[in-house]
Amino acid sequence: MADSHSSPVQREPIFNAPLLTLAIPAIILAGYGLQMLAGPSGQDLLFNAFALSPVLLRQGHWDLLLSHIFLHGSWAHAGLNAAFCLAFSTPIVRAAGRGAGGMLSFLVFFLLCGVVAGLGYCLLNLTGPSENVVIIGASGAISGLMGASSRLMGMPRGRLNRFTSGPVVGMTVFWCGVNAASAFIPDLMSGGAGGGGTPVAWQDHVVGYLFGLVLIEPWLRVFHRQYFTTN
Image (cartoon, rainbow, N blue to C red; front, side, top):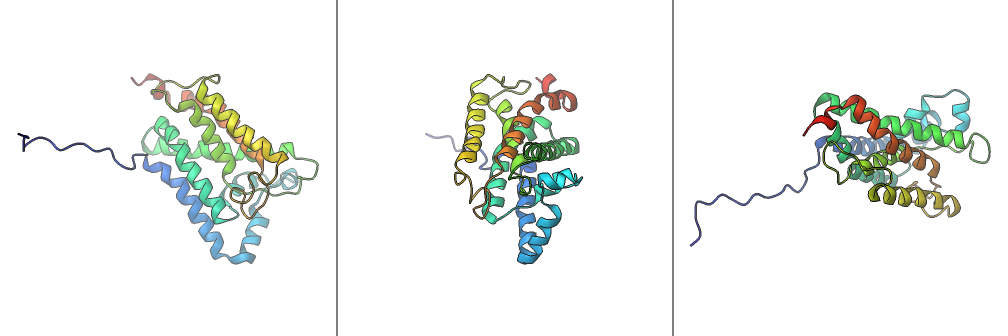
């Protein structure tokens, strides 16, 4: 006969990711909502003021390396970036730890990946047909999270995947391959990812990914030494 006083079965929570992982996706979606409130003419003004291009960077508008991250071209663009951010930010948030320090570290890491991704795009397109093409969106920053996450996924606390490990090689080949292919097949990633059928700044994605892939280990060793010392 069953024991009527037995303890209830413990159930895993449906959502167990750190709450901080919701912050940036919420900012992305809320930011695009505010863009929509500005109307078509208002959005044009925002793009003219805050979007990034190689020519504008060459003219000294370094602030655009940061501001372009917070603009998006469509709900599909914003939604896809928010979903990818939610999917790949959890390992980094957990590695950074709780509290204000961990939160600030994650946010700075995210923004730094976006800035370097934008800078890489501009340096690779200083001359040529793309020098006047503006880019917007958090895709470069999120690609950095993807690269960093590939070093952390499946590993116990205190260890990272090697560059030659299966998860890192697999993710790198997939993400860089898909983005490089979009250079030769422009429609491959346009539309949903780029918003409105516009081409995707694939160099931005690749640079961001590789930067996050390399940066995560020294970042944790300098700012989160407890990650490597906690048993």
